[in-house]
Image (cartoon, rainbow, N blue to C red):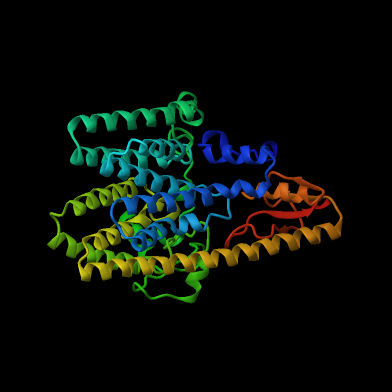
Length: 436
């Protein structure tokens, strides 16, 4: 497929998800099974976190609700039916946090199996994972020092450093080391010479005039929106517009991408935090929760594109951590606030996932209808696929005579490639005789 797409630059990017998908496909599984990583890791998050919370003393109901809330991150659930890798990274980050807490709080050595797997796989999923995991590792060392002894801090730091080095220089030799040796920067082509800017270049027009801080807060408290074309507006938490729910079902929603009610949960969490900080700041649980929140927020702040939910999926965990702390303290007012946060986030996730299922089914029907129409025409078609490269396999599986072309606007009478993506136009199809 690569010769048809001269701008293809996959060689420079982390490949863990692609390689695991290729193994599934090569083993004889259906092509669509390559999308299973997000679902598998989401379930791993759910059950791992459930087990941890039970060990920490939460009731079965609270454990189940909090684990489901953390695992129902819309970045993860909305990418279950896609080949996006942001949901995989979100799951890797959550698994790392889960097993790091298991190690720090309960000193269980088996936690290092999960820590190692999450760290190695996450780093080889996206470039942005490197600074995120670096921050989380640093705070894991701080928490280890707070909980245990100085030598435990050194051993934790040494093990995490060794795993990170192996993940980057060993398992991630291609692309990290190869990028460094051949292009002068491990994050090429995002950094170094001849750079690209996927996050900034796909920025919503409404955000371009705003400072980074304003951009971040606008994206949290605006109406949920795909981020294309139309104007976006700020709104009061817990209010919503019907069109927000459709946008919330997108796999890469740019504005308020965590869903229409996330801002409401965040405001309740902020008020709860103020009460906890004022009255219960000396509680040991509150101290560890503060460390975890600091780690999450700093890992978000180090990313310049933190206005985009799928680029900072760990931000979803902030209200969850505050809710878990409030429920743990077992004070009636705080417990009510904690459960209100959990309920709000679960309603939000349910609405987003329901919209995603509806949109996915709608796009599936559109693709099937286009394949049926092309079969009826029984002609050789030339297709510019844009980013929907996998459609080539679907067309060939349907025994269509298609020839990929490398540039847009090459057809004199093009037809849009059905269901290219939410609210955007990409590929096009035409008879090969109409190619200019």
